[in-house]
Image (tube, rainbow, N blue to C red; front, side, top):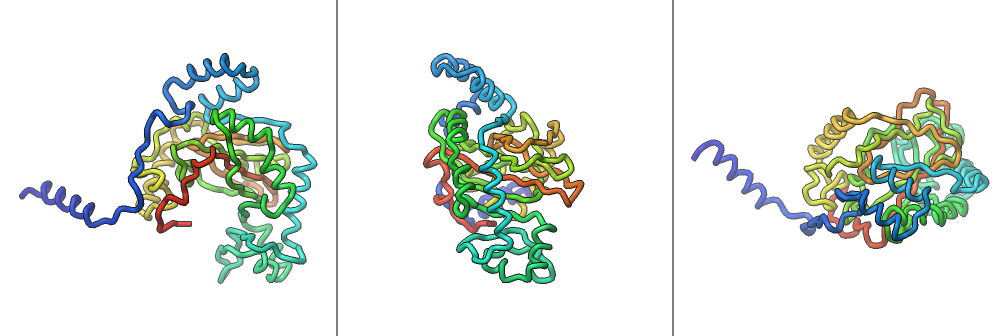
Length: 322
């Protein structure tokens, strides 16, 4: 038996001995969103006629299909943004904690390591140390819409729901949120790689500027047209296989893959005005730019939208990385 034959037999044996995690998912190209199809612009031209799209809505959809993102303004009232930010900042000095509200990436673990704390655990920390942690880390919270009336009102904003429904060409539902005070300094990534969405790419991210954003504060960075790239080949049973379920080798391979991709596209920074919203495709490479002035805040609110039934995370099998 040749060395090549032995190696082939070993691979087959490993495959047989490796338990299957979950079902086998099969992606039907006919079920992909219209904007991922080869004739997307032809479909859009027909939609413009059939749906009598306004010039503004047509341009938004054209930008979405060709660039992988679009920007809208004057969608969220400024006083609502201010109210949400006030609620956000009061969390650190609140007298009573919110049940079930976690804070991520706080340097309050053993020896200053990053930790996740509940709101009650955070308020139990000495005030000075607590405020130091607030101002010296890229912390974030999820689902602030469950704890702030203003955040919930933005979460349910009807114009954002209309626009994302227009993009999907079917009804859209706000699915999850993230809230930031400072820049994330996060490496480039694709949302499709961290969410379990089926069929793939039925997801829209909305990054909302809650204040005027400085180029030195670590603004959102993104790579126009990168949404045209194919799904990472090691995610061979997506949505079961993605970064949330990947082993360390696949995680590293994805990171190397993304670094290679970012060299193919021009990076842009979203130096937004307060209230500006950037909507992006699930495959668009994006992240947090470098923070040149750590004293500058970058208050922002992120909402992800999907059509009903297309967040299939509850059908995916662990173990999970988060």
